Length: 328
Image 1: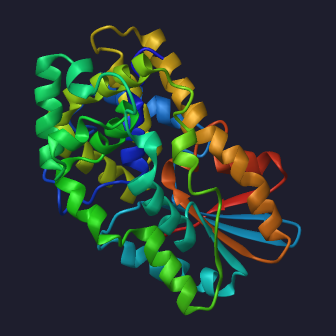
Image 2: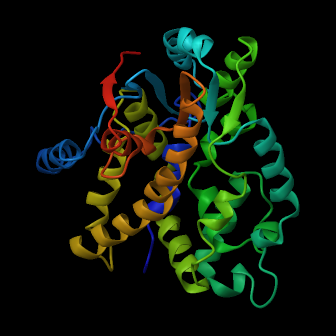
């Protein structure tokens, strides 16, 4: 994986920034007509490319799926109104991380040595001087002193770069759709359970070499100047029910970056999609099936997990579920 470009913005999509905090240009709307047509064709070629709210049924089993946007936005109110009755009727709400997992992750982030470079050169030594200056300024904009960021693992810094500085306030609010759905479940007396262990995020990158991590970080740095544009594009796509559009946008535009060909960029996107999205989806399916044995289920997770060859919707269809898109 030479550059692993999509990683930061894949996570940005799963943890999409708020429009109110970021003032930028919608990159899809700014595309030349030929690239816009290419993008639309690429999106249309994917299974289940649109929609954030779905019902899956098989026999007497009923599952409602909600693709989420993890930060606060006033438009979540409409979603909550649409899904409230489904949560009240469910036996359980499944989310990526429930309250216990969130607490465990916060503790691990504070104490886990896997986030730090334990020996050898730190980031100012591993990067060129211009690269380090750009990174140091990016970390300051996110409230992280450069001397602290210098000791972080490159993959962890790349994740932080995936959330534009203009959206950091939204992270602190901890009032994204997932959190609002969990509160609705608590109010209705519906238990909340996690789809995966709290430390899954650490295992996603454990196979990467230092050089692969540094390549991932270096690829994120040139995009820092357009962070607000990506934030607006991500948010617009999500609330239009078109989250897959942003993944395809990043893939297509990466064809023109230095050091890439269309073939190499597409191959890297496919590898990252497998590692970060599809593998987790397959791990979640038995958890969902087990919950359905107890009665109706509502499951909520980042919207990018819904579409695609091994998106959750495709996996459920192959398991015999009938799928229906529902309006929000």
